[in-house]
Length: 266
Image (cartoon, rainbow, N blue to C red; front, side, top):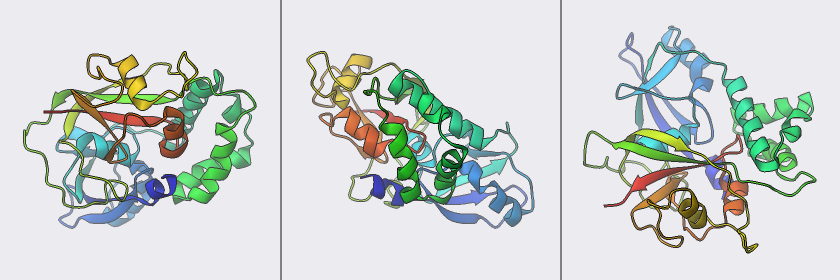
């Protein structure tokens, strides 16, 4: 699964107010939009600090997660502009530290990592190099102590898209190969995060459905089936019976976080 996720791309149609010519590119799901700044500066000849979609300033999240949240028609039309600047490297490393702390109760794994390994981790994201990434992530995911919690973030819609009609599916590049079309887009969201252990009180593997039922019981009254809402992960719905630890190891983003997007069912 992980190799399919890293091989999955999202086509972008990037525009700048100063130019009538768009910049077209396929971007890996696990990558970040700010990594395109040097190329965009060279192409448009203008300095930019932000990306927006239909007037919404896009947050510094992985491209695949942003695509899951907004479900745009592809190629995804994104506008360049001025906005808050940030250091994408520091943002990424801080997120890795947070995930490490959730998994182990401390961030010793990433904090004790050599400068060489830390650099390799970041370079693997920039280069979309899964082979190198796995060498480093294996160290972080297999410490000497047992796994304490799953770094899980749930993106919950707080309002619906202005249009009640879903965007048509114009490409399969926004989701991992072999998956079905996702539900309609959502334009406003909040993040729900809590400590979830990899096993239940009866020592059974914690499942995605079990975690959702524990965290958001009103939206997910069943541990087995999607009744009122479902979740999207890397462009696809996920079986509720999927073990949460397996998803963490195979389907987390490069920073170690398992990010799922809630979509309401009709």
